[in-house]
Length: 182
Picture 1 (cartoon, rainbow, N blue to C red):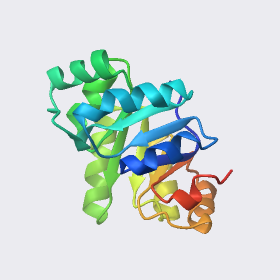
Picture 2: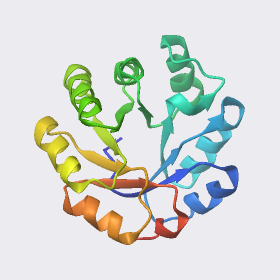
Picture 3: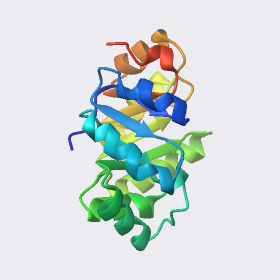
Picture 4: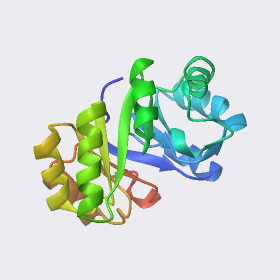
């Protein structure tokens, strides 16, 4: 799977699933789901020609170890994962999934520690949260040279534009009113 660009509908609830599938974008991300629902969600999303990313850390009933990743890869068949955990990103890369490292930035120490982690594990892409910090998005790109997805607290078209202007290649958002922006 190529690294996604544009808006990435982020599904938090089952009732949002159908809306996300109907958007014009190629990729959808499932933020929180039970393992028993995941296979059919992925199946229907792929049937609608969507690439599927799964937030590995938020799958209820799935353990974040090599066996959990093997189960996800062989039984669920997503195109990629997002995770805040370096070991999960490493496992995803081992299994040839698109591996996106999510980084929550609370302060400069969190930024420094996340940059060290990224340089060590070399994810395919980085998602910066909150995604409403254009100067930080640019700084992370300059230091890692990895594609950046802005996510978290993105609530308006101005936030989306600011993220793109700062160098983000995509914006993930659970705000349905932004799912049809081009």
